[in-house]
Amino acid sequence: MAGEGVPAAQEALLRRMYEVFSTDERDAFVLLCLAPDVDWPNVLDGVRLHGREAVRAYWARQFAAGHPLVRLEGVRLHEDGEGVVATVRPGMRDASGDRWAEGTVEHVYRFGGDGLVTRMDVRTDPREP
Image 1 (cartoon, rainbow, N blue to C red):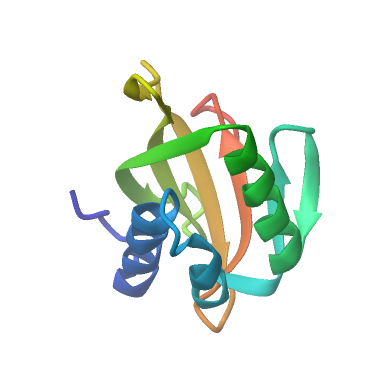
Image 2: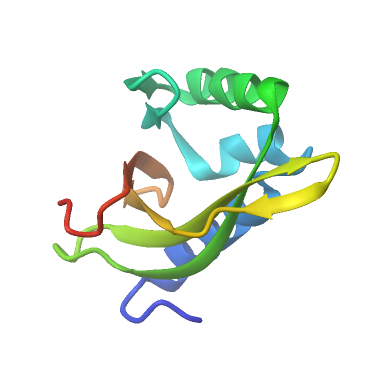
């Protein structure tokens, strides 16, 4: 499931991000994966967030409402050769267990010179730029 053409360090970082997202390690890992001025989508409210603390607060809000899950299904180089596209299956954990969506979405990542994520976008249609 290695992403063809994806730089190894970027792929490793994304794989680790998805491993820890649904765990208590999530907050501590923010410093190791997100740039200080990261630009991140708030899909709940349809706005953009800026900075690590804003992303942490957003994730805390998501987990207060329920237990979101995201399973990484693959990575590939973005069409422009400058970013990485992660294909993911969203889900939710509740009293009955883990429930997974039937379809996938794409998370598009951009990285800075330091190797940290500078921007993330969500594509529900793979034909989006």
